[in-house]
Length: 336
Ligand code: 3EB
Image (cartoon, rainbow, N blue to C red):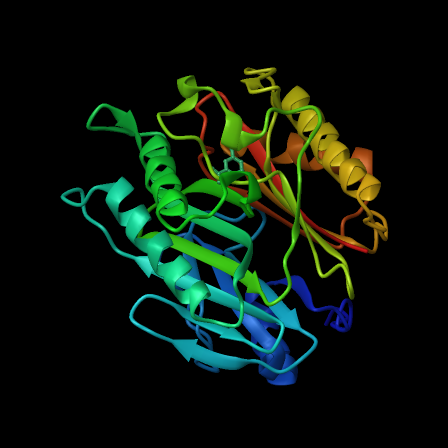
């Protein structure tokens, strides 16, 4: 059994656990576990303990399933309403949403409905600050009613931000990637404490993307620096081989990987300039890697190991990415 005590004193920390580890971990630390997201092909693998799992249908490199487990340094209370299932304590809250939709329902409307529900919840909670959002849905690159589904999603999300008077240039960090089937899955981290949004000097801010990428810009920041007064945490959005607003190296997985790592490095450096005291790649980082084609899984992982060494918490998923010319996307969490 691997050591489980890393990051146990953080406001939030995450571990990637395999099916053989998760039940033991929950027995030991379940009272402080705020969120469990399972990634794997097909339907949800339920846990012995009956612990609630948010499921994302997507193949995992090197295994059947992996669990992303978010733990806090203080015990959590469970929460549930018609839309959101979650858990939180006096500092943080994780919310999970899973909405089944059929082709009769407009993805943009569904997305706007969900984000409106999130903002309604935040406004009447003690956690008004949205720090990080994860979005997964099937057929992200499919064209529906003349518009790519990722763009429809972006429209609905943007409309909700405007309706709730949320400044788009203060958007949370995020990712939006494909799943292989199943519902629209969204989970988020909110906090009593505001975060600081960090942008990447090598990239146009996504909320300022030109109209060629969709009628409404994506509402996310490149990273969010959180818990400045305590256990500093940098949530880095899904990051890809984009310079300015353009995709670079459209046909090379290895060059896209190197460009993506350079972009993540640039975001970390920008965060350091804004006060982040990075603990370093070995002890202070978790990576979630999304690779479009299975034949690129090993080259991407080899380059990450070559450039950054062994990352303690690393998971690689096979998913579609929001632009058809992107072969991979990487998100990160860094601790101070
Ligand atoms: C990009 O940089 C790649 O719409 O929430 C990355 C992270 C991307 C988040 C989102 C999209 C999103 O534009 C795509």
